[in-house]
Image 1: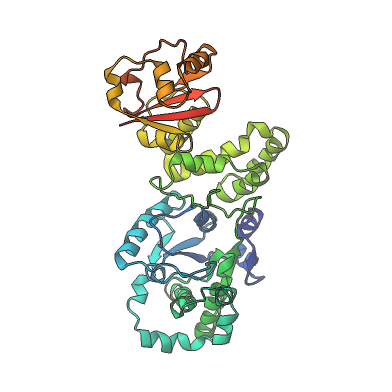
Image 2 (image 1 turned 90 degrees about the vertical axis):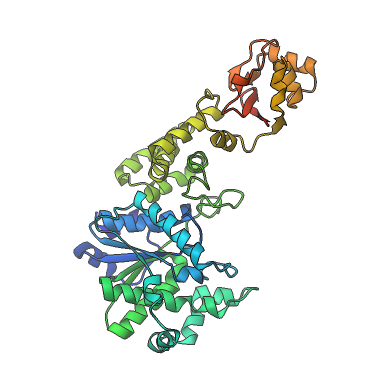
Length: 421
């Protein structure tokens, strides 16, 4: 299977600018780029579509270029946006760029073949008048306003500023620069980039009388229509452990529905299509085992957070299902139980002898001591996921997890976190 066939089979191809592309990718070694504007200090799950597309180029012997938008990131691409971005400072852009650059190493070999470039390196050398004269003259206002990325913003309530309107010229010049300096003839991007990609192809044709090509990937949503990389609350799922913990990252993938998991295995892992095809039977015949979801979650989490991150995520998941709570950091503990009821007590409470009955009442897990005793006698109370055998069970400082909290559980899933200060 050649590169284009694999990209198509895995769901990465929504459209292409030329019917010659499958032949070229099968017969020639090409250079291809995708751009990433450093508008945040981390990449997110939505970026994995472009990252994996470039990774497949490298795995098939082609040369990928990761274009970091040190210059374009200061403006912001209007494509797919309903309003203008908040403009960032030079220092913030540089900070974001450095953080994102390291994340690409988890998916591509940047020391052999793949390149990372920054468009601030060439835009910083171009004067405004020179750019208008040498590049701007080749763009027709009518054509630009006809592009979907521009037209949708013109029709929106917020409109579009001249700053964002100019973004298409900058991205087109990126393509021209990479064509001139790295023989880059291919650009990939999301479907919302079609207008920018075709504008760059046209600029190369006009100025260099040479062909260039583009492939756009689909906008990925799950079966409920939720955009890829967004939680149900609309928050991004980041690749940075400080912004999305390995546990929450793992949970995002393991909770994917049966309707989506095979499609996501094709796109976000490097398992062979035959291996993935074998899992379709598991999804169809044994959905309760969630084997495909576990494979997806383990593969992507290990790639993004390493084996140690995957181990921590699995440990945290076991805890949620009644596993032993030991050797766990406070941050992970709070992350696991972020959505359960919680109480705050004073550490000075440990100065007196107190037992599980007192704890249940003071933490709000039981309405009174009589109710607490009945719950314990019924065998339904767990402290740190260990069944409480009697109402006389004393609570000691050594019971604290990470020195700061206790976990109460009634039945199988009724958790309460008790924090101490």
